[in-house]
Length: 319
Image (cartoon, rainbow, N blue to C red; front, side):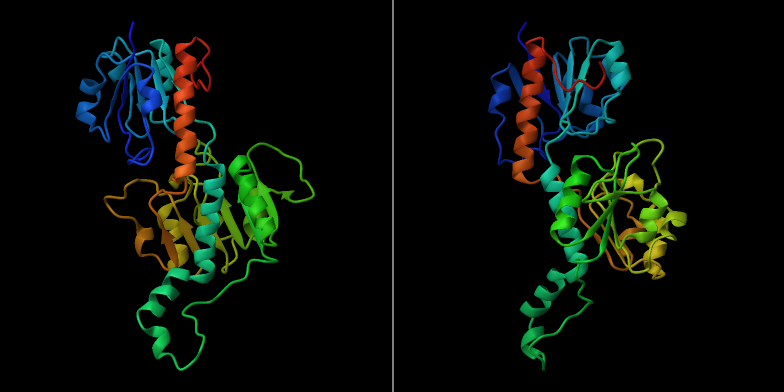
């Protein structure tokens, strides 16, 4: 039986700078940039393999897709798919367990450095004539902050958390970490309880997966433990943070600043209290999206499907 492979939302992975050629070698291939909810089933009919990033695939859809045998999630998190219902229908679900470690850790520090130096603000002011009009040869529009000697608290100490910690060490920062899994301290970092981390850290960077237990992890009570000068960085999952609580802490001066690449609802079509919060930087979920990271994601997605078709599946999350 010839495979029919359909990508339901391929644009974020490949806006035109990568190639789908390797998938085309595996069967009849069709790719959609985006798929609205009312077209998911019609576009998926007769497909033996579906690829999705954020297009939801739920149990009710599977009843209408008798040919479907494989779903490849083009991301690490796979909650967009009802994996249990897929298993009951004999549909394998795979994910991409690692591809963006370096890119996400790098972006966490891009956000942190912007909080520390406000490079864009100063560049815009200089190019807009501010420097030419200045009576001084040097001026700054916001406090400039050195990271050496500061304490970096990493919440979630998997691959990305550890890479973020390594970058922090390169900046001369002291590193403390917390993880849901008990881990021993090492020479370069110290494992501590979450409350201690929040009290001690000058910078708190979130790198944990979203679970039922840690939804709303950063709330008003925990924000009250942090130093008034501290920064919060979130490149993990938006629902880890209670938006209104963080906005209140920033607007009241209870927290020094925040930089977020993720929000609880994406896109935030109904707005977010953080959009207008003081000293808050928000970017549109792009930490993962370097071309290098997306190329690794594409390669793994192809290999996941190739191995499934060969009877040697890998990265199956509902086996």
